[in-house]
Amino acid sequence: MTQYFLTMPHDSADEPTMESMNEIDPAELEAIMAAVGRFNADLVEAGAFVTAGGLQPPSTAITVDATGTEPKRIPGPFVEASRYVGEFWLIEAPDEEKALMWAEQVSSALGSRIEVRALQENPQ
Image (tube, rainbow, N blue to C red; front, side):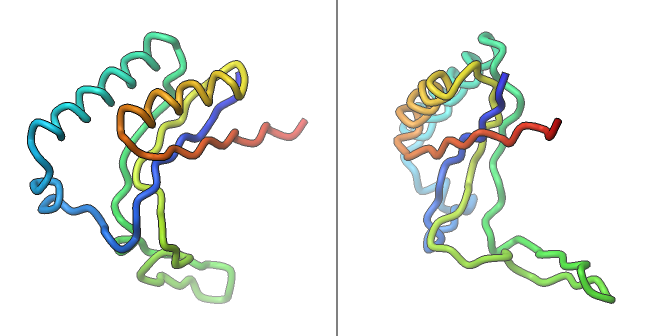
């Protein structure tokens, strides 16, 4: 089966923090968390779940460049962008259509767009 990377974009101008999470209506946040929990449970039940997680915002990134004579550790993301990956799921699906159906389910649960990309196959 092919693995697919489902990602949820965040706006770089509004990096979420624990403080901003506290500004969300508790009932709304609880409903979102319950919907995502059901989505994750559905993935597990279907044998499609590989892993999932949330990423810290780009401002916390450190870019490592060891291509020269001395390794460099550069604070910040390797590219500036108006949007960035905030959450992700790695799933297995028999085909793109099924992966897109999973993405539609989590998009509805989160009220957000979801990008779907297949992982490259290993070379023969």
